[in-house]
Image (cartoon, rainbow, N blue to C red; front, side):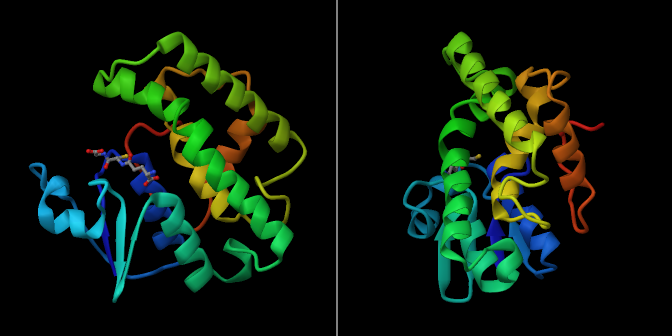
Length: 199
Ligand SMILES: N[C@@H](CCC(=O)N[C@@H](CS)C(=O)NCC(=O)O)C(=O)O
């Protein structure tokens, strides 16, 4: 298996986490010098973005899609539930990762860390609204999809929330959310990334 990633990409970090937690051997490659826009790379991902996973003949772009693939193929029922209702709950959080998280904390981090021009007030408001929703959910359950074990939903949402300090987001008024971050960081196979919130 081969993962194309950037070290500072929260989307790639989701995949690094699951590969490590599932103990799946893989090589990792960082497309450097704009190689992610080269004709060769665009054959793997026409959007010219990381992460991309190549598993034999299978090529998958998009962090959420990769989590679904790895969870279903290698993770068993715990990471990717087979029950239709629970699977739908996982997919709902994958969708949240691609929408509310991407347009909230992830975008705010792009602004503060990489000087991306954005509507800061609107993005802060979206981020705070999301953190409030997560706090509410995690106040009465351990994982984003209720159950004894984490699913890929947790890994999809985790990186850009855990990177809150780089987005200049204060987590002090979200105790349940902070406890969830700590639980994820305590999972066997958790891998570090620079900029992550720590208790
Ligand atoms: N929806 C995609 C977004 C991927 C994405 O935005 N990748 C960024 C790094 S986090 C990237 O490769 N940016 C380079 C570019 O767009 O040129 C996913 O979840 O994987």
